[in-house]
Length: 242
Image 1 (cartoon, rainbow, N blue to C red):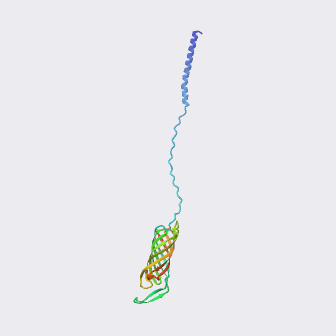
Image 2 (cartoon, one colour):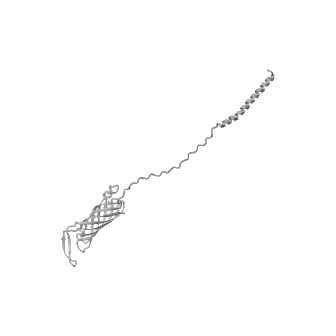
């Protein structure tokens, strides 16, 4: 092969190589741009969940229930006022006969008795639901033709309230006491003071927690000059508890 031909082929090969290299260099930016285009879009950072403020729920309203009433059995004071009618249970008694100058001229034994009535008042304190202490005063007239009064310190006991969880409207009681009786014991114008005892029973019926009907009976017996004075009385009235 002539030298000129070999030289020409060499020149042509260099030109082709240069052209191919130039073409390759021109394609690289295009590839990079394409690579930039296909890059995934930036994902925004996930937002942190917003903590909701706790909502305070209102407590349920309890159903209204009727509270049990104490019906006077709670610790506290009370007052009561009653009227009564009584029967004289005295045995035969002896009346002293006096003259115009109030001198004793003899004695008259009688077997008749007479009934009477009066009023009674009480002031007390319920120290425990089955137990109360009180002061009771009676004014009476008509018993065996003489009038008088009686004051006793009593203990009032409500037996059913020991076993009851809730006091009832009806409350049965027993009462006992001792004190002083005063009056004219079958001897006109001869005033006496002696001891006396009271025993009785009854029932309270409560209209409300504080107001009650009091119905009862008690037996009274005197001592010494009033030893023949015995009567049973039936009383009815109202009691108010504070």
